[in-house]
Image (cartoon, rainbow, N blue to C red; front, side, top):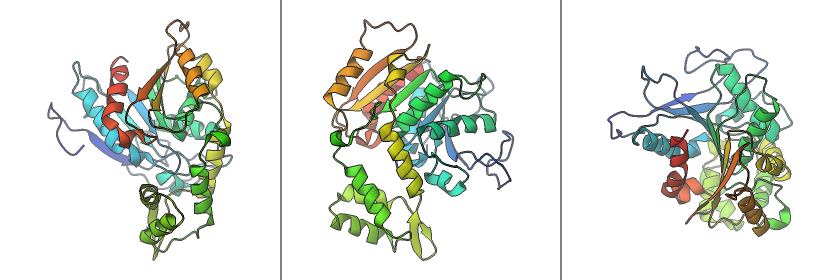
Length: 336
């Protein structure tokens, strides 16, 4: 965060590219021979203090074709809001680049299958390689929401070993927890992926790409967002993600269901679902099913599901109504 907080303490943003298992390695590490690759990530954290050297941690997971940087502004705002609350609550935010996305796409070493199970396992590998405590909360948007659900499910099943601790709070932001049927979709994501697959691996320029997308009938905002995922490569532009791997992840996202997890949420965990009011991704039957699971009369001795509606927002919740999202999210973070 560029400015000072109310208590004159600034949040620190650190970018780390992971290739070393040692938690004491330098912040920017060089390549080393390893059989296990770990994800790239950024941190937004409060200043170190003697009374709270290891603040509670939240992992923040982006959606398809995105990266952790998409969530910098919101994560800084959330950390700032919590830090200046009364009483203050210091949180460390870890903004992860999922496999095939962002800086993680440059690292390589993430073998197939590119699915929700392995995307979640990457998070566990990151925790183990750095020697961190397990995250207290996970925030996942869109595809990242299902990665968060898979992470919780795998923790519960013991996939990550006996030392793994489940997060106490899981935020699933505008991500349908069940299978995503094609007949319930407008097909825009599929059209985008098909278009990108038809393009050359190197793009003449960002302007060329945006104009090409506009000519194909895509909106200006979508075309410009797709263009923001380009990076310079010599005289051309190339993608900042592994397109084929991302397509496989999208297929897994559509085909995977976590209703069983929501029906029996892990003990002491709250799974909070946020549905954007103007999002077109929610079938009425899905909404009703979620409302039943979050009913006050339901036995929650083993865990809890809550459902929240974000007003005045489409799917891009952190951009459409970040203030409203903060108002929904902040109280539950303060209760941990």
